[in-house]
Image (cartoon, rainbow, N blue to C red; front, side, top):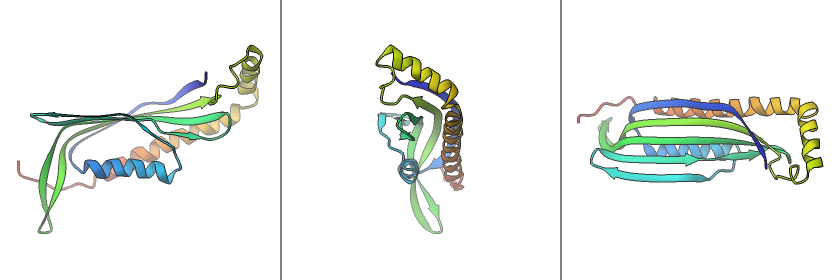
Length: 170
């Protein structure tokens, strides 16, 4: 079994206002494609209520950095009371979403990603020795890598959502 070390713990982002939900999701998936991360959607729920849509998405992307280590993120994307609105910009109408967006980021470093070094007690002992004395510098590099990637994605989403400076009449 692989050991998973939590590096980034519940980095939170909250936004209320206008946004385009499909563009936001495309921005996130495009970022992972640019950085060569593999990913899948663990949860994608949408509930329609009288107050608007409640959307809950959990993404778990990963990146294999070596035969032994793997970087992993968990992104929980909650969109609350999402309604479609029309906004006029430069004389033309744009369809956007209005609601609350809450995003939680977690970043992990996984060791023994294939589970080979925990199959026998002697291998397990060797893996502890190697991690403690030989892979420590490599592990620190992976820590900074996952921190910088989470921070980069956080800032990209933050700058994207702060672009919407339109007003609309309810």
